[in-house]
Each structure stands twice: as structure tokens, then as C-alpha cells.
Length: 282
Ligand code: AMP
Ligand code: FE
Ligand code: FE
Ligand code: ZN
Image 1 (cartoon, rainbow, N blue to C red):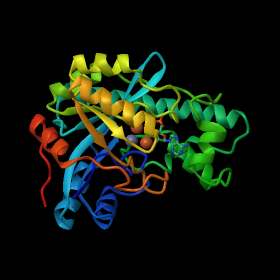
Image 2: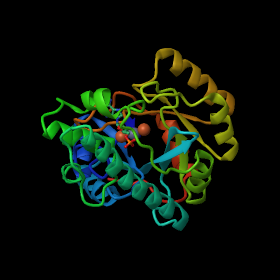
Image 3: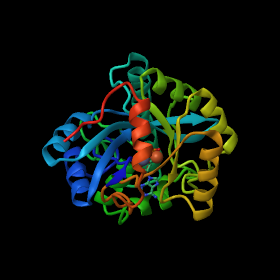
């Protein structure tokens, strides 16, 4: 009865179409999966159709990009209303800023003689999908500059790189409030990940709980055993849910479906707390 609540498709920076991610989830033996593309609900419909066809439960979600003082913070939103005007507007604003930021990063890379163009990067992004650094990485792979996404991040695209440009994203307090207003269940994603620069400090998690945060993604590949213990205690002391997930990106990352999972009782709580949309049943 494995439950994996964090996956990406070609609606953002995953490498497989939503229907393919659903099929892979079935093959991986999952009972329930969430599709949580960055800043978009574009993949929801295709994933829902596939979930019904393949007999798996689908939790519709979003991974909302947030930012505070140049720190990038990710917020998972489960079962929000996809038509909530303020949430829709905020996601669109972030996606638009991601587009201009992509162009700026490509400009910096090209100016340094790295063979990449806006067109070659655009060719890696599905129509309407959320553009991100992984798509620049894919263009660099296609051009034969690097072997895989990770090498592109290490050499050119990391947060400390001279080519890095940030994009607009809402403050996490505002994002938590928006997700709640849209009837969704906000869960802070991988707060102790060190692969992304700074960790999310406990004080900020506490501030977000005061704003309406309902859970912490505890079990995640980027968390050390010590971090898992710490976050388990933090979730318990703050009285919020503790989830676990793979953060699957297809072939774009090593993360495998079902490598971290969420307890059935926690999913039940998420379903009870949500009022924006429903779980797609088989
Ligand atoms: P962006 O949202 O455009 O700033 O890009 C961040 C995304 O890049 C994250 O959501 C990850 O999916 C991906 N990413 C970060 N580091 C790596 C890496 N080393 N290898 C592959 N993908 C990565
Ligand atoms: Fe990603
Ligand atoms: Fe994330
Ligand atoms: Zn993710």
C-alpha cells in the first residue's frame, strides 16, 4: 500500500509525460501517488485520466516555488482548487519570471562561449510547461557539452554559479496562506536538503506553521538520518503531519518512485484537511 506524494512530469522538469509517470508508479507497486509539478497544474488532467485507466489513486498537487532573502524554498500543496484566482495568478507570475530568468541565464552562458541558445533550451520544454534550470541542462546534454543533468548543475547551473539568476517567487508565508485559501494542504518540501544551498531553519518552519502550514516532508533522499530524526521530532512538537516521498524526476535524477513513502494515516489526514479538490479514485 505504498504512497508516494512528490513526483514531477514534463509539465515541469520531469523527463516523462504525466501518463508515463502514472504508469511507472503502478509498475513500482504504488497504491497512491501525487503529481507535484513546479508551479503548475498543467499535468493534472492527463495524470487523472491515466490514474483511472491504470487503477491507482492520484493526489493532485503542486510544488510551489517560494523565496525569502535569496533563499529558494519549496512548498508542496496537496488538493488545492486549481481555479482559485489568487493562487492561479501567483503561479502564472512565477512561471513568467522563470521564462525571463531562463533567457538571462542562457545569455550569460552563451556570452561565455558555451554553446546554448534560447531556442535550444525552449526545444527541451513542453508547450505550456514550467521552465527551469533542468531544461538548460538538457540543452547542454543535447549539445554534447555535458553527459547528464547533474554534471550541468555541478559545472554551470548550481546556485553558487556565476550564471545563476533567480526568479520571482512568493514569500513562503504568502504561499502557505494562498494554498490554504485555495483549500489545499501545504507541506514544506525537503527542508533539510543541503544540495540546494541553505537548509530551511526551524524558526521559519515554526513561522510557517503559525501561518497555516500543515506538514513537513521528513523522509526524502536529500535528508541525512540525523535530519530525518530532527524533522520527525520537529513535526511532532509542532503538531503537524510528517510525510515521505521520492521527488521523482524520471531520468533527470536518481530518485526512484517509492524510495520514500508516506503513512496511510497521514494521507487520510491530508484528505480530511483538503477542500480544494479531491483524490482521483481508480
Ligand atoms: P529551478 O527551479 O529552475 O531553479 O531549478 C531547480 C530544479 O533543478 C530542482 O527542482 C531540481 O529538480 C533540479 N535540480 C537541482 N539540482 C540538480 C542536479 N544536481 N541534477 C539534476 N537536477 C537538479
Ligand atoms: Fe525539480
Ligand atoms: Fe523541490
Ligand atoms: Zn520536487
